[in-house]
Length: 188
Length: 227
Ligand SMILES: Cc1cc2nc3c(=O)[nH]c(=O)nc-3n(C[C@H](O)[C@H](O)[C@H](O)COP(=O)(O)O)c2cc1C
Image 1 (spheres, rainbow over the protein chains, first blue to last red):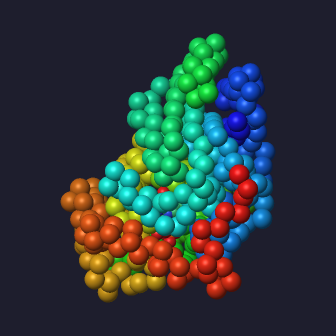
Image 2 (image 1 turned 30 degrees about the vertical axis):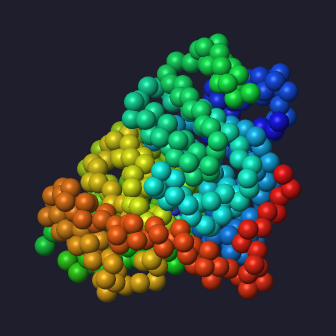
């Protein structure tokens, strides 16, 4: 089983980076093959909105940087883990620059899910989704937005299941670790 | 004459000038200019490429009395380049800037239902509250690509959108808050949703097929990655 971790932390000193290592360790114990991507250290172009990945080079971004490889690894994965500081309730710039570049794995064609329009997916295989957001202080609205966003992304990417956690305020790594472990046990 | 002095329109589409967002921003700009208020328009995509330009953009945004972000929806949310600007704005705008500023956003998306944009609007509202900007509301537009390259004024389907935007601009010019009614009218679906959804689901293959590059005409379903 393959997992890809997209770490959208903006800085080196952030609890998310500790959790990234912990997740790798836990997944490793469960026999997963893990690839971590610390997005802040990657020089990735942002999506230019050309839809070239649907109409010029179907299934591949026309931008030839590491974004292509990451997109491929996500397509091959069984689990996609997103780590991000809550940014006005959403993803950080670092994570979003990659999320915007995952649309090659979708098809341009439409389908209705619960009566609402979405895209069909290019591959039958779709990873499960685990998203963990960190907020330096509790904020109900940010947390609501984040949970809803992950839920809607899972609808659009057709992830078979999605799990979302928000950790806010003073961080107790033991408690967070237990929470992550519980999630991964369920996923595995 | 309005007392509003500085209106800044931020065009948040990575496509820059050839975008629906620019089309909408140009319509609003025109309305302000017609009323003697000098509004300015900046393309975020041109400014985020280097730190200096980004910093300059943020300073200009902080200086505006009325700030309007016009953006597409990307992956249920705000496109990365705009998040970058909001993050920088948040960092720079500290207590030394206590000027009164108002913020409004207009999001357009590809799916026909305008509500896909709701979360992006919620994020912008949260941004406003976190940075001390007065929130003026967010317009949500579905079926955005149908507005591409069109004059909104002359495009029948954009009638409600124009009416709502006109109401919003009028209120801003008078120094009033944008009425909820303006947002509701501007956010009405461009066409009856049942019909559009039927067409998109049943003829999507044809619609996109027409846009495919000649060299890859039959390759819409390609799976370049061995899984
Ligand atoms: C990377 C990417 C992600 C997108 N995600 C969504 C989405 O989640 N929902 C949607 O309805 N449209 C989505 N769209 C479609 C755009 O919102 C739509 O084409 C819009 O009209 C573009 O506006 P613009 O011309 O101002 O850039 C996406 C487009 C791109 C390129």
